[in-house]
Image (cartoon, rainbow, N blue to C red; front, side, top):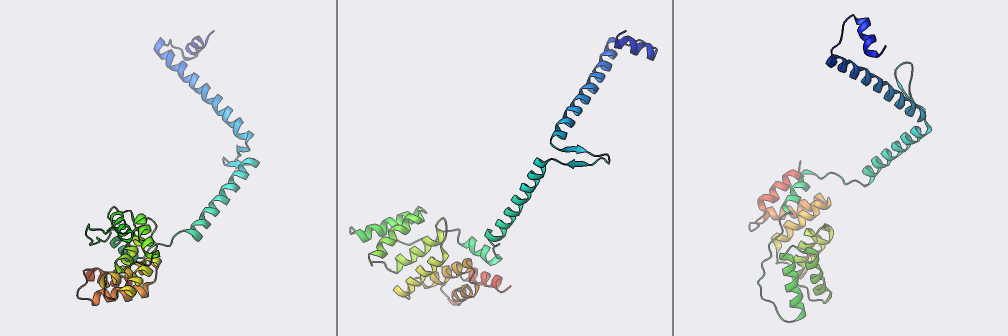
Length: 237
């Protein structure tokens, strides 16, 4: 007696072929599921993972314990790395200053260049700046500085390059702006106070930044007076 005949005998009715196919498929699926469950249970037991009588999962394998221990160590190392080496969040004033630094200052130089090496380097520095190649522009300006021929405008442009380059160096930018004052105290006074204030703020020196920004506010000729007022409000919060 085959399975079909046995089923029909004990259920007192005859199955049609379509019904029989459904019953056969159900029986085959059930058998397949039991086989797969048994295979996986065997594999997990080999790794020390098995179900207890209370329905919980037990991790008894040395491999599993080592894996979990290693994962814990990696997590602690990642957390420690973030704590010790992660950058501190920016203040609201620093975020606003960063927005002002996103648009490079437009230099007001003509296209006329001299034929001597100093003027050629100065012209190349200007062209590189206009193309936003700030590191390249800075290199030409440093050549001029090393020759002892740097003027107030050169130091000012150096400060801008140091602010706008891929990895800004705000400390050296402030030094360059101070060099402008030493070279010509009257040159770029409003711009120097404004950009020095931004750089000092990004450095985290809020007191010095506030002093520079206040000079911008006090100047009747500054184009950045309103922006300086806004930054000072944030610093006082």
